[in-house]
Image 1 (cartoon, helix red, strand yellow):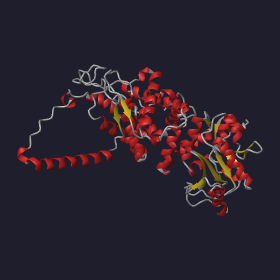
Image 2: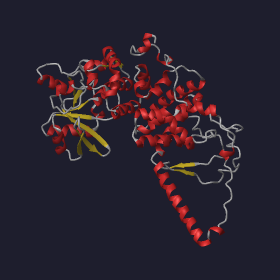
Image 3: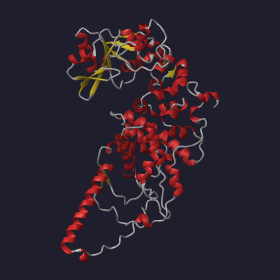
Image 4: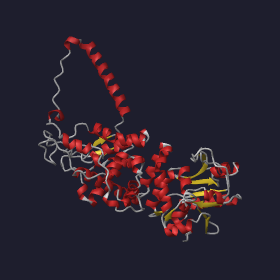
Length: 503
């Protein structure tokens, strides 16, 4: 297993050489070395050095120190970041040395500080998995292996460094990282490591929700979203992260709609992986959320659906449970909602009179990307295509009953902006103020007795239309709630998981 120098990022190589010129030891480390040895393209390059964060900052003016529990330096080259850390030791091992090998009083091994500097070998041994503990020396063109990572790469195994029981108790997020590496690099999890993952999976709840959510997004962002979800389902990890989604993916196909929702989700995840491979920019958190939440909403958000009176409210209510569980930022939650609503203006319609739409706002690019993902999935499997929810008496492709037959012809494209509740509140207040001012001026000029009565409002198409199909709406908005049974696609379990026991 050799690494060609032309595959190494020149800026990362420059950081290593400048640190070496300053008298410090410096190597490429971690995922970039792993991916280069596996013949994959690294998503980023990390450097490890004997220089402290402050020394790194003094050497590189284009850098800044980040982190609290784990302080390191980011060296900036335009939008690119070369993460540069100092050799560290495992703080728990240092505490054990201070206690002369005595066992800690508490059984809690969770690491809460990680700024104990150490040697290169100590730094390699404090890392999570053997395949991530490899250093590469650019000058000698040699891989430095203190943790037997090269044999595991050759046999394509994910194995913890040291006792997996201790490693997962130190940081339960490592359980999700093991899934990520197995899915993204097409590796197998070593049996004892897998057993301890299953044993300690409930301890993920000890970790900060922000770390858990971000690791979940990374699972789906790296080009192996479908495989990652399959492994999460097999290991019963998805039940801890998004139980609403897990119950649907493991549930019995009680009806055709439930089966279609599951097929759509797997189709969207496969299309998301193809989009990630084809585009230089990884999908955002908001786009990932929207893709996960779309399957039960696809028919309601079809541009030809007219049987849902308040689509915005329906979408907000349908996605609320999953958002409450994942606790994304308010910005990501709002953008995900806007991306979903924008699909009604982006997906193709069978109505030839439909008005063209221009999207504006922060969500527009990601909304177009989600529309491409949906159309890609539906082109691969036409059975996933949307089935519009129609009012009684509506013919698909003819629009809503009572609609102007010439509507949309020779008209300017419709402009759609971000539907921000805060903006709407200010606009409503401004409009009410303008109306009151207009009325007061009107009263002063003519007096209340001379004010002409306003004609009654004509009934809208929605209020005059027949009642919507409540059964279809309930089916579309119903969360993925089905009894748990063995998923057919997993077979006996790739890593000896629960399904191999015939559960």
